[in-house]
Each structure stands twice: as C-alpha cells, then as structure tokens.
Image (tube, rainbow, N blue to C red; front, side, top):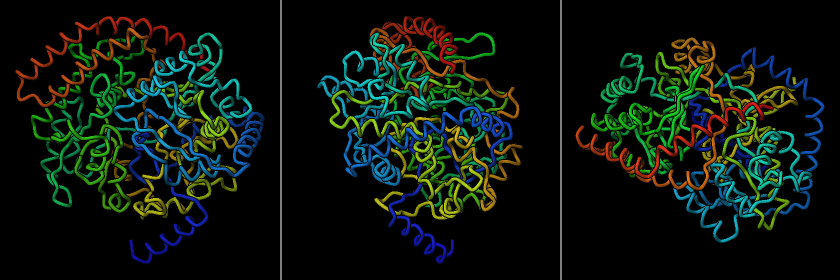
Length: 607
C-alpha cells in the first residue's frame, strides 16, 4: 500500500480511537478460521429461511429488544465501571482484557473482565478455587461434569432468581435453560448455567478446515488425497518446494502443540471430523463413527481408530522430517506465531492462517485456503439448541451480581453476539438503509493494513474477546432483521472489493463460493451429527478418563517421536495394555449406553 494510504488509514483509526471505538478481532480459538477478507452473499435458501424466521418472531424480537435495552441501561446507569474476575476454561490468555472488545463491554455494561489463568492447568485451577469455597464472579465451564460439581457445591446462582436482569438469556437460550434445569439443578428445577454457541440454524456458508498453503499446494500439482497417508505425500512435496520462509527460517509442513491435551492428543479431535468421525471432547476415551443408519462407537485406542491413525500420521511426519521438532514442547501461541510467519504449510484449523494470509499476499496468489479429503464424508455439527458443554455461570459468592448478570445478558443478546463475532457496531458493521446488517467501507479499508494498532497494542486479530465464549453461533438468525450473526453470511455491499486473486483461484478450482458452500452443494459429501451434546461423566468415569488419559497422552507423544517402527509398536502395545488395565473398555461401554440416551434426548430439546 502507498504511504499516503497508510497515513489516511491511521488518521481515520486515530479518530475512531478518540471516540472510544475499537477495531474488530477474532478469538484465538474461534474455530471458523477464515483466511481472507472476503464476505460473500448469503445463499438464497438461507435468505428465504431467515425472512420466515423474522416474520414469525417479530413481536417477540421487539419485546426482547425493549427488555434488553432496559436491562443494559439499568446496568450502566450509574456510570460505575467495575472489574469482574472470570475463569474461562476455554480461554488461551489471562489478565485484564484489553482491546476493542473489552472497550465495547465496558461501554455497554460498565464491566472490565480480569481473566484468571487457566490454559492446560484449567482443571487444577478450577478444583483449587472450588476447594477454597469461592469461585470468581463468572465461570465458563468446559464440560457438564465441572458444572455439576459446582451446582452440587451450591457455588452458583440460578438465573431463574434474576430473570429481570437476563431477559436475553431467556429469549435466546430458553431451551438451554430448560435443559440445564432438568439435568443439572440438584432437583431444584432451576438453571445455574446457559450453554454457549447456541445453534438453531445450519450454517451453509463460510470456511472450515483443514487449511493448506494453497500457492505451494498448487505448485506441486494440487494432488488429491483420500486419507492421511496420501496427505503426508502431498505435504512432503510441499516442504521440498518451500524449505524456508521469506526470512530464511526453516519451514515445516506441520507444527503441533500439547497444552490443550487432557486425555489424549487433543489435536486428534480437530482432525477427526475431516474424516467423518467425532471425538466428543478433550476427556473422551471413545470416538463416534456416524452413518445414515447405525452409528459405531469405539475406543480411541482400538485397532483402526481414527485417533490412532492421527498419531500414526504425526509419527510418519516426524520420520519424514516434516514435523516441527518443537511440537512436543511448544504451546498454542508458539505454533500460531510460526504459522503467521510462513513457517507452517498445513493447519487442522485456521490458527495463524489468517495472520499470514494478508490481502497483499492473497493478491499475489499466496496464502492459506481450505482443502478436503477426496471421497470422504465430512462430518457437520448437529443443531445445538441447548448449546455446547461450554456453559456460562455466575458465582454465588460474587460481590457484583447485578454487573455479572448484566454482562451475561449482553453476551446473550443478538447485538452483543454480533459485536463479539464481527467487531464494533457502526465501525466495522452497521445496519443499512434496507434494515439489513452489512460491513462498513472502513472494514474493507482496514484489510489493507491489518497490522495497524489503534490502542492498547491491539490490532485486528488481537483485540477480540479473550474469553472464547460466543453465546449464539454464527448461523443463528436475528429475528429483527432476518440475517445471521456472522458477517460471513451477510449480503455483500456494492462498495465491497472483489475477492482476492487467491480466493478467486480457489473458487474456480472448487466451483464454490467457500468450503461450506462446496460441501452443502452436494450433500453426498457430508454427514450431519445426530446430537449436539454428549454424555456428562460421573465420578467413576471421570477417574477412569483421568487415569487412562495420563497413559494415552504421554504414550501418544512418545509414539510420535519414536525412533523406529519397533519402538512405535512397543509403546503402542504397552499403552493399550495399560489403558485396558485402568478400565478404558468400561468407560467406552458406559459411553455407548449414555450416547443412545443423548440421541433420544436430542428430540426432546429440539426447540
């Protein structure tokens, strides 16, 4: 970009800073992994469905909006800004939240959030806090067992007792509240949590991983791959073609990390859906192989399991010299930084890919784009009206209950969700004269200088929500205008620039607007999960998961770095034997029974 353009952009950004508005960013683990600055038009079927949803819910939306405005106004009326502590187990950072999202929260409800460190020590931190008898003001749990333990200890407030403060939670997550009251209330029939990522409409537009350095992939002939072994062949050729980055640093096809591990190498969970398999969560010892007729549930260490295929994939990558040797010691942030620096060629999700794939690079045909396994059905998530097992609660020992409830209410509002997902309203997006949401001209201008910092050292990618707790999924429809939460599903305004050279090349190759469009255009390419949530472990299963998990995750990494085939097989055989000795099959048998109940439950909480 010309220097005059840079000065013009900074001047406008500074003006926005003066009025206290910040620039959009995405959470580190947001899951979408969009790698471009492209926003394409929503599909016609989505538009028709959203219009119907808006018509059917107009009256309710008006009432909800009024209640939300009243609750927010009351929360911020005194102008006082308070600091609330939060333990968010899905978060990847700690300390006082800063950046545009934190400023938006302060402006809306008079709250600054201070994140208690969690990361790979989150479970231990939670147990220590519960043992002390006091949880922080807000907690984002990562599974239902954690929630259940807190409810059993009378450590949470029931939203039922504060309905006037959280109208958005009742309006937009009512099914989730009913589910929580039925299942996690000690028989009191009250909801002590609300699920996150409430999903009431399928997302049929947008990007999904895995992601590959598409320019290098095309350079080696863009060969198809049907499985992980064939993918290794492709990645090996790519590393030979791109051995160093622009700064002369060593490039690896893969760069992994272990700080998300709980009961196994958690990155295997991200690989599985690409191959049509579901590993429910980080503590699961089973994997689900869905089919149109009868699902199959097997141990993650059973012969032929997708998890062991993933471990084998990593081992062979190391044998071929295309696995970053730091993978066993580095953390998530380290891997992301390497990806952003052009030192990684393949990512299971979009971590760091968008930081590398700047508009400038994309216009040169350089950057990451999604790819797929040929002939393999991609697993798509079921609708989740109850949300995911990630849930948000307010502590019974909070000294700032009204402020905590005000934040929860904002988080579950359509506008709060849109701000969290897309950035500040009237800066990065706005409601147009036609009543539809659209990205602003400034949004597109900003793509030209995505590294520009406007305040608190935060730029486009680093100023977003650090708590990783989006309440309403991207595809959820706001009935006030009939459009989804995410900018990726909005109509493209006339002033939007054309798609980049890289994106256009990909669109031509795949005959689709984006990867989800590619999948849904031919539904023989996909399988849709039957349930949106999975069984919660009892104490016995929790103990088995922990004991087997220590065995499996330790042995798995040793297998990845085994010196040869003999050592690999010896470690694997001992791992399976040890996991069996602590009850892994008992865990799997328990899960199979509970999973069948979950499938029956899915119809009960369908709406």
